Amino acid sequence: MKNPSLKIFTTALMISGNTIGAGILGLPILWGMAGALPSIVGLMAIWMVMLGTAFVLVWRMTSHGPEVTGLPSLFQKELGPF
Image: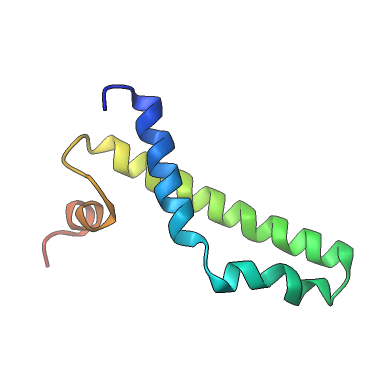
């Protein structure tokens, strides 16, 4: 990929696809019992943490260049082969 914004977009899609699971899908139902306002505030806080983590991962993945193709190669590059 020669377009860097396309690389960031596809990496963001990969990360967001990994974060969606049964726990994430069940949070609105569970937190809805607490009321509308606490539920909205809590979900927004969780969303901000996930968004910040995604930005950090995308930034680190794109800063290493084409040799980092996924999370395993990023972890190997950052933490070493062991």
